[in-house]
Length: 435
Image 1 (tube, rainbow, N blue to C red):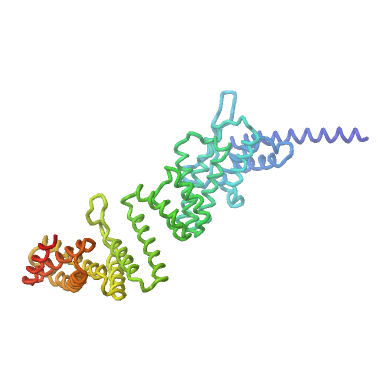
Image 2: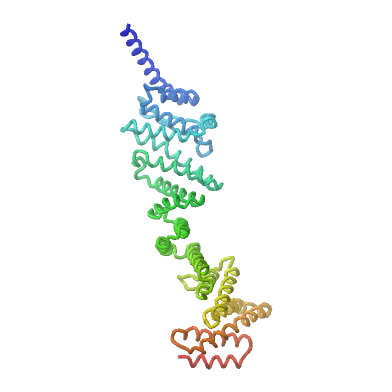
């Protein structure tokens, strides 16, 4: 009796295995006939049954079908093509996405299932054809990339990160060898990784972002100004001064004219000075350095030409911050020449900018602008005069000679503009005597 049962069981297994293999072929035939519903049904059964659960072809077909389900219909990509071997060679068949998308709502993880199916099919068949996968996977990569970008634009950074992360998984198929030598995809993989870094940065997940950012800094494709800015920003928050300095140096060397990098550096110094002031609020030097930093931000210089660069929109606010800090320094240390001289310079340079415009204007415009220019000169004069007095009191030396000459020159030109001829001659005489 036992032998009869055993034989009956074997016979049933053989029939089941045959049926499941038939399901694989049926799935192919249904796909040829553009019947996605029955093709899906057949392949779902084949990949669950023990007799075909390790069949590479079954998993490949599942990946194909589920990829079609998870790919949104668009004019740019109305179908996914697959190849089937025949007596006449390989023949291409399209899966129409509008037919496949009817299962999208009931299979929200279709693209994930597709990837896992492709992965399993590769693991089960070491002699797989690269051409089959290279015909299908780029479409999946682009779909995931576009989805990630869309989520980023909607500020859904966690979802975007997940989408770009799936591209990483595809890249690793066959131990990363599947896409070897495909330059266009190498670039997309790198940019996708950069976008992951940006998502984590935007989501305030500094530690996760930094791991990817440091990887991107080593890749020429992703050595962008944005990556350097994110890195220095995180190093600043982490108080990692050595890494901040190293990265900022590299950023300035690679992007010497990038305003955001220049401002990033200045903001770092501003924050450092504010921290120092909090610890030593009565130290005048800190306020002087802070004022100079604000003034530099308000009046950038093109390092290549050494000429003024366009001012930022908040230049007036930055200059006012400079004045506030110089004034505080002068209150804390009344005999310090630097805040006095710098305050004079703020108003004198502002007057010079107006003068440059006046010299190119017609007579009417010249007359209209003159009172505003002269008012700035009058503001500069007391600070230059105070600087002159302080330097002369301590004696003109090598270390203060340049400031003294600039102060006298500023006074001479200011007296000339404001019609104070005697004082102008006095300054000329002093200036000629300074060697």
